[in-house]
Amino acid sequence: MDILISALEIGLYEDLLALWKMCEGIGLSEADSRENINAYLERNPEMSFTAELDGRIIGSILGGHDGRRGYLHHLAVHPSYRGKGIASRLVTRCLSALGDSGIQKCHIFIFNTNKKGIAFWDSAGWTLRTDIGVMSKVIKSADMDYQPI
Image (cartoon, rainbow, N blue to C red; front, side):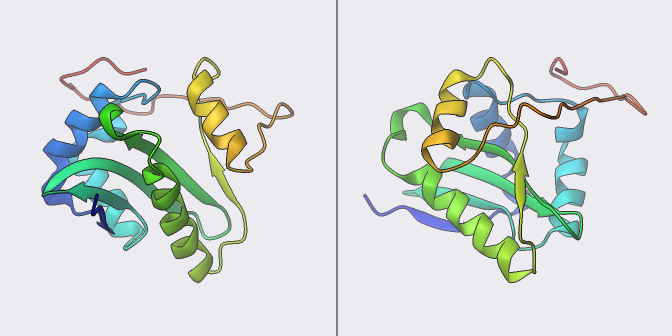
């Protein structure tokens, strides 16, 4: 299986959205509109990646930073292609890009109910933090074709 890992391009947005919707544990919201993902990619060039097989998107990851900490979002692999190291390759590419930018620590956000995701990250050497939590506030709402989480 010859899987190509390459920089994520906004032209693939519809394929990415379809992949994210089919993968459990991916929470979609207004922040995932085409416009917002494009802005994220422009702010964090060459830090998000796709996995392609025969011209079809089978995996993706968004990576970026705020100047001091890196963040990974929406690691997704099509259910038919899991267990083949694709997620690990995507994560490695993101971490490498972040490291090349001088970022020394990276965080992910994961739903507490995403047991498979937690197991994946744990097996990859990540630490589940129980000493902090995340609080959110919607600043501005827009109409979307999916229910925000």
